[in-house]
Length: 132
Image 1 (spheres, rainbow, N blue to C red):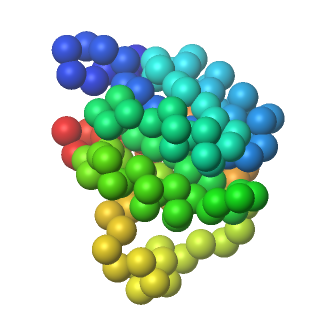
Image 2: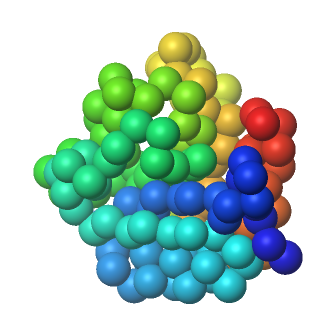
C-alpha cells in the first residue's frame, strides 16, 4: 500500500518518541507502507528540525523528558496550523477528558503503545484522507 500526497509524492510523517527502539520500529513499518518518515528522540531537536509545510502528520509521544508532547504540539502549531497531529502514550487516555483539558487542540487521533503498524497505517490514512 502506497500512501500518496499531492502530486503522488509520499506522505511525510514526523515521529517523536524518547525511546529510540519505538521510533525505529514505527519508521520501518511506515516506510514499508509508503510513507516518508523522519524520527526524533529529543523534543528540542524535533522543534529545531521542524519546517512548516514539511509534514502531513506528526506523531508525538505524550510523556518525554525535558518537554511533553503537548508542549511540542503547541510550539509546532505556532509555525504550522494545518499539520495533523496524533499523540501516542503507554498510558490510558480518554479523548473526552483530553478535550475538556485542551478544548482548543484539534486532535482526532490517539494511539496507545504498543500499537500495531497496520492499525497505525490505517488510522493515519483515515485522518489524512478526511483532511485532504
